[in-house]
Each structure stands twice: as C-alpha cells, then as structure tokens.
Amino acid sequence: MSTLALFVLLLGVVVGLAVVVGLGYLVHRRPALKTPVMVAVTAAGVLIAFAVGVVSVAQASARGGDAGPGITVSPSGH
Image (tube, rainbow, N blue to C red; front, top):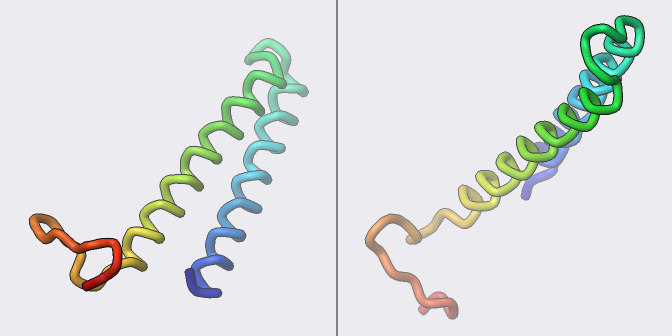
C-alpha cells in the first residue's frame, strides 16, 4: 500500500474516532436517547467494518496485474 493510501486510511480512522467520541458525548448529555456505551461501541464497530472494507479493496486493487474475472493466475506468477 502506498504512503498516500495509508495516510488517507489514518485520516479516516481519526475522523471516525472523533465521530464515535462525539456520539458518546451527545448520548451522555441526553441519556434519554440511548446508553452512551452502546452507541459508542456500535459506532466503533461500524468504523472498524468500514476500515476493513477499505483495506481489503485497496489490497485487491494493488494486486492488479493480470488477475481478473475468468483469468487464472498461479501463485508463483508464471
């Protein structure tokens, strides 16, 4: 993965964590909405799922080359 891709991923994680903390604070200030822990944990789970999806797509696109639908490529690359 390139340095730019890693930086964008890191930036996404930082922004996502800020959103998680913001949701936790919001729900803490207004307890009638939901339990703060449940909202923060759910948001963190969604963030992790999104990050895993982005990383897997980035790795798949980085492989590139001759790999594509209907083309079999041996593990040795021959």
